[in-house]
Image (tube, rainbow, N blue to C red):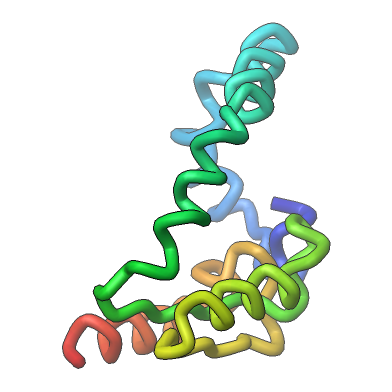
Length: 119
């Protein structure tokens, strides 16, 4: 959460308590290592398959992202690649957001989602 929020003031006790439900199963070093290994162990072939099929996607796609996202260090490049593969994609940069847009700007994210799904 420390890396994922653009506004550190949003890292409240209430948010940290809510995260307990997510982080609870990963209390020990071994449990956290198992989670990391699961992510690291993702097969490259799976991502290559997604990339290969992406340009044939016909469903509407909307992408908003936090301009201040530091978790994928190349977020602007990643989003530009999505836009290149799917030119009809609606891309909305959120200037004051990090990786966890829903925490940095919950009302704005809710509005964007509602507009996308209503459209």
